[in-house]
Length: 350
Image (cartoon, rainbow, N blue to C red):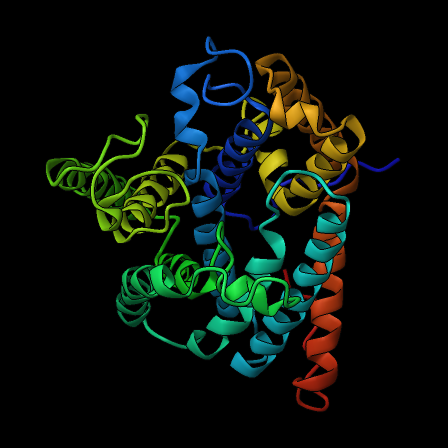
């Protein structure tokens, strides 16, 4: 078996941020914060894993779109087809995972719809993307209050008004992520700016929300709906606060990540986030609903370490994750067939 180079051309800080997002979602699904199940003595600090990791995941998805666009030597139309193809595959994978019947609200189908919605914005400037993203986050959150669940039961379309990940508001995360992806992410100054923006923005957003009567995010929900910090409340304050949290996480990960053996397991984990996310849904389906309804931090730790070990071995010996490899191959072939100029010799792309 041939060993492969693990990180050619990758921004490892983004892989570390993806790992943090996946670990957070694992904690939200099977970890015990003392707020779900029979045990009130869980790890209380795990409240941070409610809602925020999936928002980080969505922001990072937008970052990936911009990095794809920048590295696509053929042009924006080619990138648009690649993004559209990935969107269709994400919707399909999401439908399959939903069909397993776990108690987990699978984000992939909704994320696929968000990909389709942001295609017209691929060529926008970082400022335009940030402004549009902010508008969608706040405006979409307000509008969601009046149309929540309106399209429930309608395949794919229900993603727009879905309770957990409504594309009408969550697309803002992807747009902000696209703005981040157009920055010079390898420069320390950019990482520092993301850290300070994220930290100050989170403090101000949470502080103002609490001042106007909202409960702290680790407390029982109280106060006006529009200022709620409760996970998945889709209030303007929750959406904006989650965005700043995402910027903070990405900035810190860009700061500290290095392609060294110390970081290898986490980087491998993050480099195949789609495969790992899908694998944990399959594991939960096999283990049964009780792993979610009666959470255990032992189960959380074991599942996380097992998936991380599998990802590390896969990355070292086989390279890209299985679903990531399929996504890249399918989207590139589709784009080459539809949008590549004749005789362009576009060649392989990351």
